[in-house]
Image (cartoon, rainbow, N blue to C red; front, side, top):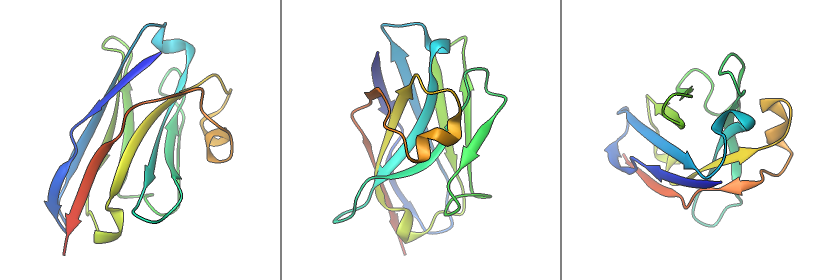
Amino acid sequence: VQLQASGGGMVQAGGSLRLSCTASGHIFTNYIMGWFRQAPGKEREFVGGISRSGATIYYADSVKGRFTISRDNTKDTVYLQMKSLKPEDTAVYYCAASELTYPSELRTGRPDYWGQGTLVTVSS
């Protein structure tokens, strides 16, 4: 699976941004999809995941209520809508695809495929 993420950029604190990740090469609905991020000097962390149908979504506590994950299986695309952004949300954001069963498993499990990352910078 090839994953192409886009939509990163610079935004002021309190602002919004939407990331997209389009998959190719395999049947999109075979995979749960996830978003991760890596801030400068820190380890990559789980942001959230979405089931194959889109019916089940799991978020990290740090973004719950501010970020929304969705997917459009007709476009082979997963989205990360980010609102009320904070400077601590600054990171490179990665989308990922996994053959795991539940989105919550992405919290500790390792995805099978990674996108190239897109930088989000939130200024104070």
